[in-house]
Amino acid sequence: MKIKVQNIDEVRKKIPLFHGLSNDQVQTVVDVGNLIELDVGRVLCHEGDASTAFFILLSGVLKVRTGEVSLGKVQAVDVVGEMGVITGMPRSATLEIESFARLIVIAKTEFEVLLEADDHMAAKIYRRLVDVLCRRLRESNVQLVRTQIKALGDLTRAI
Figure 1 (cartoon, rainbow, N blue to C red):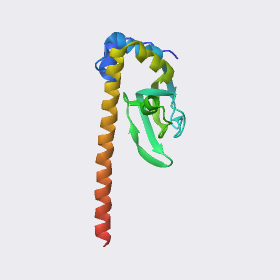
Figure 2: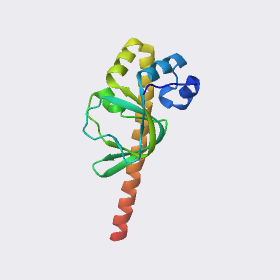
Figure 3: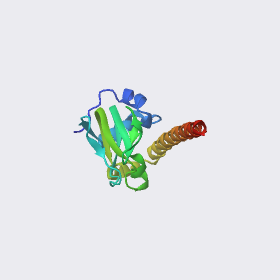
Figure 4: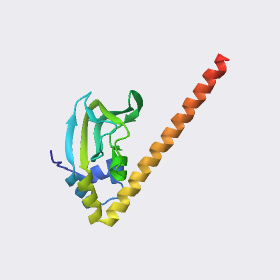
C-alpha cells in the first residue's frame, strides 16, 4: 500500500532517520516505500534471509532474536534492517512482531536508485544510519558489561 502523508514536516521531525533532510527529500524517500501492517506473532524477516529491504517502524514493537536468544526490541520510529541493505550481507537476526506494527518498507534497489540520484541526500541519510548503528553498538556494549558484571558477581558468590 502506498503511503499518503498529511504532514511531511511532522514525519521529518518524528523519525530520526529523516532529521536533517528537507521536506521534499523526506517525501521522496516515503514515495519509494510501502506501508504494511502486521499482527502480533508475525515474522518480518528471518536470520539468514537476503537483505532486500529495510523498515521504518511507525508504531508497535519488534522482538529481535538470533535463534532463540533475545537480542532486544525495536521501538516505534526506529529503523531496522538497514545493515544488510547497506552491506549486502544476509539478515543478522529474526524480527518478530511483539505488538501490532505499522512499518514503511523500503526496497534495497529503489533505495539505491534514490541515493544515486541525490548525493547530498545520500550523505545525510548515511550519516543518520551511522548514528543509529553507533547508538546500537553503545547500547550493546553497556548491556555486555552489565552481563559480565552480573556473571562475575554470581561466580564470586558461588565461591
